[in-house]
Length: 179
Length: 81
Image 1 (cartoon, rainbow over the protein chains, first blue to last red):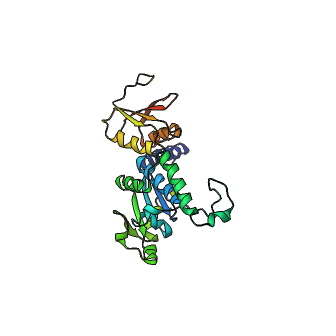
Image 2: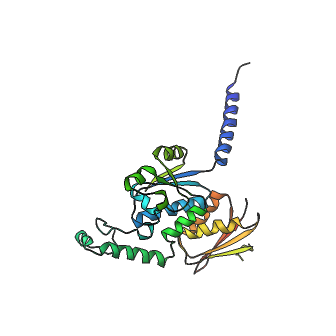
Image 3: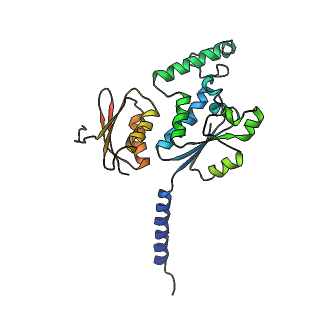
């Protein structure tokens, strides 16, 4: 019995339909790397992760280098906005002024007041929402060793792992972001 | 009540809240509804006009209607699953 062109086409159609069903049943996945420890850079990974959880997208954030400060309970209430080398500062000013004492505190205060005005949750609130909605948060083992950070310094519910563990997760992700 | 006669079982007030809070609260509110129930979400965030439909599409819930009022938007969402 020979296989006709029509048979081939039919088989392809069946495979394609099956593939589509399998793909639509599979939960989407997002993997984020949070590598910065400033207030402005702490927001995007947490906003995206909590929104992903609300959209039934499985999500994991890998906190590495200064990004580890976001989940460090001794430091995360005091994240700052840099005033130096930040051309996006709200009030345009010569960069050298950003180096003056007190300018970082001022930039931080300004950003916090805008965020509060439009009711954006604080970093602590976003971390709580992330934990409640099942966002997996991973602290980088190597960074912890370098910075002398202990697991007790981190907020509750953090998993500690290395690059390979994160990459294994990210290899199956539909969305991967580096912040 | 929506303009197409959609009668909500629950109303969620997200006025003055900005991204991502309306979406997070919508998800929470819909999870408490029975299947077939209708949730009305009231938002003032202009971004919600795109965000709520995107959320509904991704999570497989049915967005029945968007009402644009002068001061806010009303979304009527039916829980499908």
